[in-house]
Length: 124
Image (cartoon, rainbow, N blue to C red; front, side, top):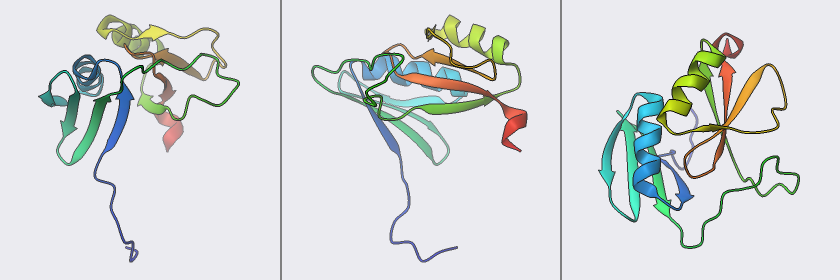
C-alpha cells in the first residue's frame, strides 16, 4: 500500500440521458441502479460506483475518432465476444463500424459512448 493522498471513489461519465445510461450499465455489468433522475444516474456494485451526469448539449464522439475527442472508453472482459455483444445489443448497445480488430469488439452504449469487449482470458 502506498501513501497516496487520495482514493478513487467513483467514475462519472457525462451523457444526455443519465437514467438510461445507469440502467444500461447496471444491466451490462450485473450491478444495480441505486439512484436515477433526469440529471444523474448511479450504478453500483458494493463499493464500485459508475455515475452518469447530464451535460446539456452533450454529443456522442465520432467513431472512429481520429481527432482524439473520445476522451475515454471502458474495456469489459468477457468469456465469449459474440455472445456478450449479442446480449449487450439486446440491452441497448449497438455495434460500432468499422471494427478495428478481430481480437475485440467495439460497441456504443445507448448514449453513444464507445466501449470494448475483450477476451477475459487475455487479462491473466
